[in-house]
Image (cartoon, rainbow over all chains, first blue to last red; front, side):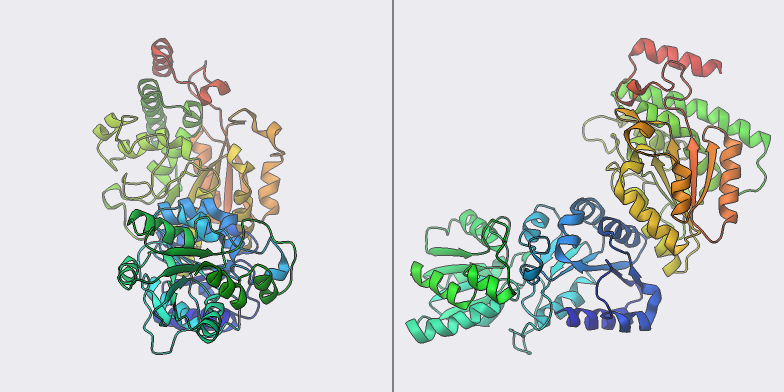
Length: 308
Length: 279
């Protein structure tokens, strides 16, 4: 996803003169082509994320379209107040990109895990919160949000994530993408962890003859309510939410809240699959940590089976 | 920017400073708006900026190439609002709503679009200056000629983001960026140089790559000369450390930090207005 971001931002910068890329001293060599194309529009702001966020606000208020890029904890919780005031309150045209989201940098420990970023940003009015599941969604979201008014947060993984959408899918901000259709159980998810859901769906079919519909919501704000209403009419026996993020303020909470407001909550089972509300000390690579938290395909499978 | 600063101009600005001081104090008393001491310490700087330095047309205040001024010490808003009203960014009558329910005129500058002439919402310290830095970089990227100014407080220099911005501003050698520090020697609960290791302040900025000057922030000629010199510096951003007096202009408010939060009662108001008139 990182490389897709670098390539896509270069392509967009060639089309639009107002795009500026700000990095918090990461992305070694990743932006070489961008710098080669126009070094004037790339700025390494150093390891000073609060300042970087306010710089972006100043740039946006004077006609530029800054894109901020650094590791998720540092581009979200580290500078939350700068996002609140400089980006959200000013409705500034800023794209905030967090890389290595969720447990992507699991080996680096809790300082580099981001399992609350969606939750804290969800408390702010007027900011789009996107979490593409693959490079295809990321590309289309980037292209779209660069022309929209107001701030956008995009939460991405690191590298090597497979494409889960088909190449033909035309993805739009605030629109869900069905990755795999199915009529028994509905799974709504965000981010690259949906790959685990797809693997779980194969096992569900094979072992239990259950057809899982796997959907990428693309983000949590705006929420695709039209799609959710359509899913209600399909009478699934169970809804599952999946995210590499805690329950507070994430997709699960958002869906639960929507179902509750619309008074659908009692109509079927709802399972929220998410990271626990605790710091993770027993480290390993992302697959290991997902497995140990029950967030890999087998964990997802067993959580679904235990509820149906 | 004018090179020659006439006696006439000086007299005009001094007279203006008395008028605006009275309005600030009246408003504080009538609307119970605090930060009076902070407003009185920076009003002369604001007057010089808006009457001499800044290239902003109040009638065309969204012109792309206007200079940008950010009141990074947002709690000085009651002073800035008086300045903007006097410069006719909006009708003076608008300030009759100051502090009233449903008014946009309260203790801090709101986001742009609500009050003509306000570039950014400030009040949370340490935000305005980094935003002004972003504007200065933006001007360079877009090859525009506007300058970017931020007025900071000495207490605000406690904030880490000020020094993050100073580090990058110095590195980028932004000669279109001007930081002015209203060094009134006090922050909310004590002497600013005692609460943090603020001094030596000028040396700190210089070591961060800034051109620094120290002036009397109530002397229009010194303000004039310092900005003139700051414009001559083409290799560095400039900081002007303006030594000021909190509560300047009213003897019983001067250097008394109680006026950070207190607002004058009727007797104090009358006494203050009388004293300013007699100066």
